[in-house]
Image 1: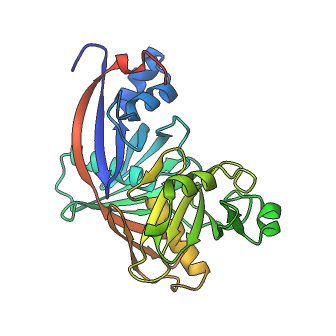
Image 2: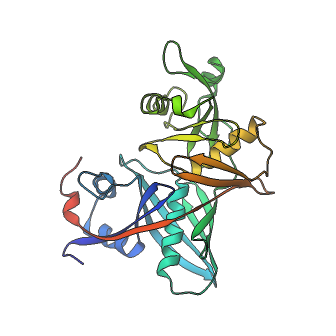
Length: 299
């Protein structure tokens, strides 16, 4: 390892890239007094750092029993803001920890705490995929959160121009989501409309993730991630889309569906307790010894 450096792992799930910092490296950075907000902004910037959608930090981890572990995570977006939930990021962390562990077990279960939620994960070694349970969707204003008075005033539609407005379904999956049904997702000017809706703080006071979906098979989806921009896939976004489709009667609760995202297809279903699961593959990209000079300047 380079002097004054830190080891960072980069992984991806369906094109949604994530950097992971393990607990020993996290503790070392804390002892050095490194500000993780500034660190994450530069790390995730493709021009001055590694480049990725998010940084997930394992702050604690321990074995519960054979084949089961638990841990606590912190997450940062590319703009340095805190991650409320990052399904694919959690997926990547679970895959990485299993990859680093010397074990012959066919599957390993983890229970992670990120933000306000506990996320159950099951790593399937042979398939090199990870199933995650993000819990039950939330629709009430405080849980998402969203401004119910403002939403009702506009009949649950958001106006992006003088001639274009979209009816939306607000969903909370540990972070806020605005799910919008359209005829063709490829016709959406996502860089403008996604960004505009993300910043509609009159409706979504904490800003929001935005998902445009075609409400029939193959359920094509495009995603604008809060604090990041367009992403090729999203675990929490897929869960929110599924919840909205069930709420609007497009699919049946418990039905397993495949959502088609730019990064690939993700499998989604709802269990008998009402929790939403997603499953998709994870790919390991690199182990990087990163010079701490990356945090010498702020963006």
